[in-house]
Length: 133
Image (cartoon, rainbow, N blue to C red; front, side, top):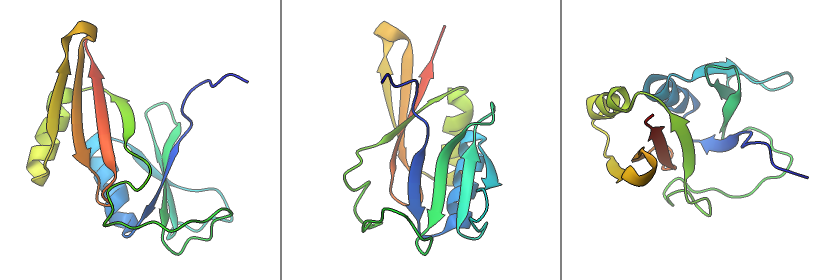
């Protein structure tokens, strides 16, 4: 079997509305309800411009087939970070600054890459990748 692409990342969130708003406002992802029988107050899927649900946001009380403990105070748990390929680095920087969010910038000139690192409302480390050219 060959991996085609990353399908999605699931984040269990303490505040579903705040997390959905964070991803919508920062990255222009569109919040949509998950498919039935999932309840909108427990699940929001964040879709990219092509309609792909790249993030699945679940409330803490959402029933999961395979469950494990997560702790918001522990940055990302065993998952180190989530990397998203993005466009509009200056727009995203401005949005982070408007939120008062901490972020770091890493430049990789050899491949034309600017990376922004920040945390989401549930302390998940995000690597936002912006390629030029």
